Amino acid sequence: MKSFQKIKISDCDKDRWHAISILLNQDPWLLDFVFTDDRSRLTADPQSLIEDSRCFSGAQQLLVQIALHIWTSDGKLNLWDIAHSLDELRFDSFSMSLQALRS
Image (cartoon, rainbow, N blue to C red; front, side):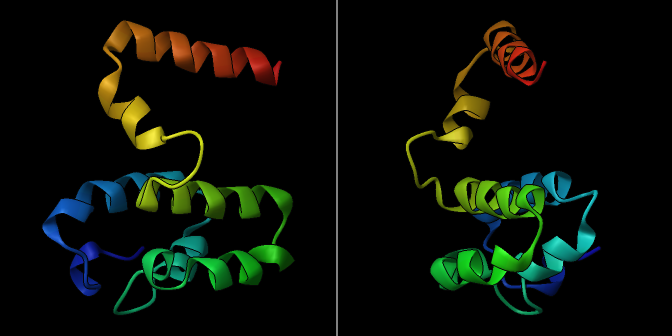
């Protein structure tokens, strides 16, 4: 698995990189897809990243989109704010509501 020391990531982006590496833990090649050897494709070229992921499974495409969202905080739902703004009990409730949607 890639290490943020091998690519150019600022200190303030290390937490986001770590979150994305956890997200993509089951598909480590996706981490190589979103982070090239020396940069983040998430910031540099997000549109082509989405287009290039169209040949992936639906779940893998979603993982790329979530990674993009974590990295850029772009979109209607700001996962970064949810993870950092809710207290533990409210975050647990949020997680349980997502689990309920799955069942």
